[in-house]
Length: 345
Image 1 (cartoon, helix red, strand yellow):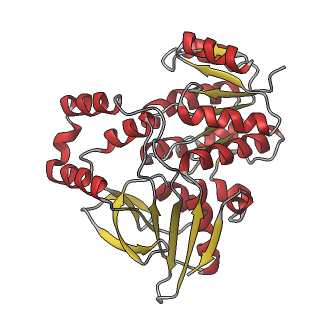
Image 2: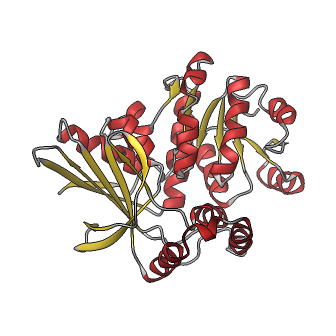
């Protein structure tokens, strides 16, 4: 018999990893998505129940969520897909989890905090690599620097992308980075800084990422920016985005970029890459706390953290409203997974 956990986007690469992890934890998930034949094949292969619903079909979404307590939404790009699934979860009193990293998805879901509280459910985006390690590290350095006014987060190692990740990156092309300044979200010009990810100082570029929403709610720090490391391929794409600017947001260019993203393999290739996150909190008097976190590759790590959070929510370990991983489960939550190491800088 299936547990009241539904995984939407079940035929995707990361979702398949999440399915394996939740089953390892003793949970039997319900598979869901929009592609009936693909779900039928996967359900038969794994011996799991499956349900079909398009995200633009509210009636059908309500039908597949009738007996569900927790949804893990794994079908990106989340800037497009999170809102209809979250709305369905609110209507049906199902706790909502997703593996988003996109800032717009975080901002939109956080605006529904009051509705989530009224429906007595938890809404927690970013239960994977985005944003579990960075959120836990942000909470850790904030605790070590009481009264911090500035938080900078650097991320290294996200060089490989699945098809879903490529779609997400395409939606950002040509947009200026967004940071938090004096508590508000603001667009800023292209900017760089260096982080020591463990091999000495490395150039990193400011990007729009979900942490400028999640870390604000976790730490209450009013100035937050997020950076990705620069390697040749990323530098070229960032330079093109910077030079062409808003032209890349025109429908014709977005259509082309999304078409190109469909050519990306639906699984990362090559060796798994260790990831590193650095967080630095600073107060107005110049006092500083910094730490570095290393994790296994993003996709398998995402599967482990998403599965564990889903298991906890199924067991009643959650808080109602819009929440962040470190606020509910603490800064040391991330240390409970294999291959994770944290060190003070």
